[in-house]
Image (tube, rainbow, N blue to C red; front, side, top):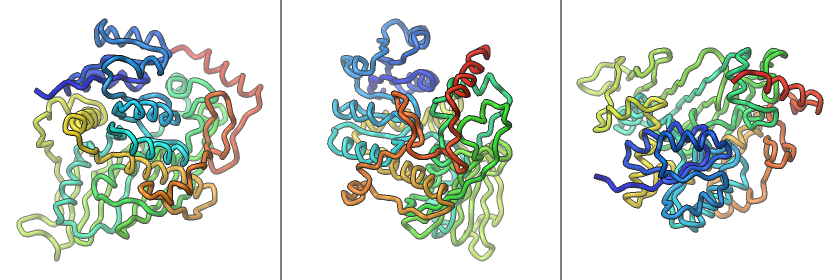
Length: 417
């Protein structure tokens, strides 16, 4: 049996959904941290009375024997906590995004390089079955040189479902109200990078603007429905990605095009893929056009099938634990992660400038780090109420008066949980 990894979780809103897959991968949750006392009590109910509970991160990170931490706190607040863990040589798994400012990306890379610990981005969409199949086919070489790829993460919600909106955005200054469409890019871009190995080097973006109804709680903050982003890559291929979009119907769609053929998951068909070749480039013994449901071909298939996000949640934890056990660097390492974050952050700046291109830094290079080490531009409110330093969407700041903010939060508070 693989050795146990002693694990801590910071932020139990998202973090609590991983309890089962952590245990299934022979992990032991020895400590959890959250401001919500009820969530801490629920953790003991699920994990047992031996799990230590904390409301203070400093106490949590000093828990005896803590080997690795899972950062599931607010989207835009990971880096300070990641650095504190790395300085103690505690391994870090970071949920959603690595950094929300360019300066944070530089600081994170430098902290990882000084630490003896492993850093990994907890990005689960590449591990969905159809994306793993597309990687297998592409890396097998039959599609030829990569030319173009598409990644769409389309996740609209009902603008009149007040209860769901409250659960996601419980107050005016909450980060989701100020999340630019370009920023939550990991689910659209990471699968393409995982499948192809290409790294974006330049980005340009355009907004898809359509305001939500004025009586909707979604009318706060970002009114863009998508950021249509185009990336030129280090192998001369091109990606088109959407960030987190809200147009049409819910879908996760990916397409990989090479010189000889292409493969994509079929919209509306869940896990099915469509594999097509040019007739003159069809490999011997294969059809030039085939639709099929790929197999997992994984010894943990039954455990994978019960996990969230198409099995991705299980596979993220398995990969992180195996990297710790084997002492190897994850594929979704700090350079992979900060490249995506740079595409998101600079892509948003391009969007605000109606498509002005930005070069994507390579934070392996000190010259690129120096360029951005003091770049603290952010669309989010600070932890002490500091105002954003860049607008969050394409049509103005979206800011409300103090009276409007108070009325909004009062309306949120009146909604039954």
